[in-house]
Image (cartoon, rainbow, N blue to C red):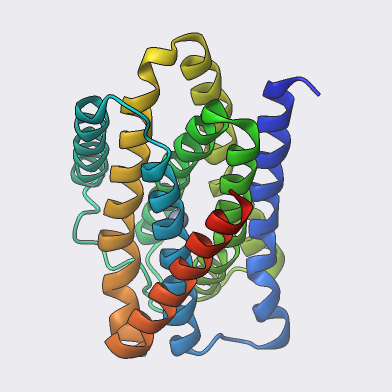
Length: 242
Ligand SMILES: [Zn+2]
């Protein structure tokens, strides 16, 4: 199969499974707050595992990778600053406010875009490695969508509408994975910097968007355990699959 189609296929599947995040809402009117914390911690662990895998794929040009990581962190911080969302409480589960709903969708779209960079650059390293990363990000899209769907539910949306929006916020992931794969494929000298960018952005998003909320929702001990165990599973699987 044409490599670009492989990237498109994997990233599209990863985005599509985000719709499963609305499933808990079919069984319950609202998801318990602790579940939201655990979903955040699971997503955080998968993102940290993906960041570790990307960092371990750096082969030469450590300075370019380090500069890329710094740019990834600064870019993520800058987008929050520009959007005015740096101090936004991301998991407000009730209280209707129209602007907040749009801000949350925007934050999720940008979050997914950085993960699209991660998938695209991993695909550029080696297609099987990219497939591994796309599966890790795809699985992580589900707990992240559980959180988003619960927030949207609190704003009066039906489960089907929440599922549709969860998938829509991940379309940026598909777009960026294909674009980054094409750009890095055409200019391989960008690979170390792009790997660094993805690592920096992923770790920053975990620390700023996922973990602070989850501590409040489920307590630091369980969140630390879930996050590290899930990250450990990704590391083990990556090691086992070579
Ligand atoms: Zn994420």
